[in-house]
Image (tube, rainbow, N blue to C red):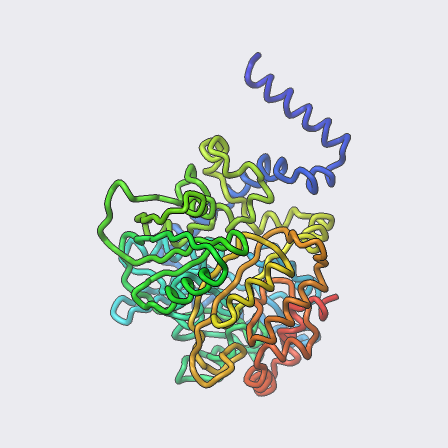
Length: 515
């Protein structure tokens, strides 16, 4: 039969089946059909558009030239809001579905939307070892620009589509045990405030604002530029895989490796309560050809599945991974979330034929999920990052197991300095923390989204930990400000007249406030 006739017949049968079952049934129970036929091709077009745009901006050098003009346009919009009487709160005009957070901000429909079209790399200052960027520059864009020059960010948050705007929240990577969270590598912020003024803040200039911006989620002003430290990069990461069994041994080994500054990277993948693979990496320019693994090539196994092979074989291993491939090693599988969307996505046949289109854009998944899928995910799916002191790791993994039973768990260590702001250690000195990431369907029988997560949040508060604010948060206001230190934040909102211009961070992100 002619291939075109076969394709036409297949599409006709699919259309008849969809008509019989209903589109909602297809999107909920067989979402992979919609994702593979529509979202993957759309994601490719999406990528091509943004890559061409970034290339054009770079070639024309238009971002530095037009930056001041675009900032003035933002200031003019804020002034217009003031002239109209400031009747509603302000927020960025970026559609909620475009953000990587799974939460869709309904406030966009009622607030004054300020258009912020700032997507360029402004300057790379090799002498000062600083890159100055606009807030919508992505991590993928930055590594593609810096790595060929021999430079990189000290902390490269994992997913390609995460933007510099996560300064307003937070970001982390497997180098954070040395450099801290993403905001701890930032040297200066430029913001447009509620009165329309443009302000630059550093640890020594407008320092209160500098330390209050992270975790504020855009409720102190609009970020228009940031200066971020850069460090020399090398061609490869020499990655050592070590399987570990027994919860106590897992925690001991992970803590031990996290304290070693000679490790440029430390990461753990916990596959069950008693099994994990702990990975440590160092930069190098030399590599053995037979051990080079370009893990981000489209036909390669998903990274978390690749690492699991060492656990199943019960053997250690060493590989040399090109630096940029390492930075974005979890991007293709969206950590391990893609296995729930395309169950056969790691199959070699699928990878070789269609892997070049993976992953679907998170923004497009959000845009097309519909109310039925949103409710399904809310009740039967978890995407959470909890930041807890390293000394509480064993107790934390046990709690994650009993309350959620989601595997793998992602372990990423970070040093938390005792700086002012919403997040800092309980004591007077910096402390080693760990991010425990849970992404997937809870297997515990008694799981109920609201109650189970409130129980988890209570545990995190009790060990003086913190919840990343991109995820669903069920705390009430008192509990939220028990977890986070709001003293500096509230002082600045009062001083800078933010209360009538921006919602409080709790009201913006917490379910108890939004529902």
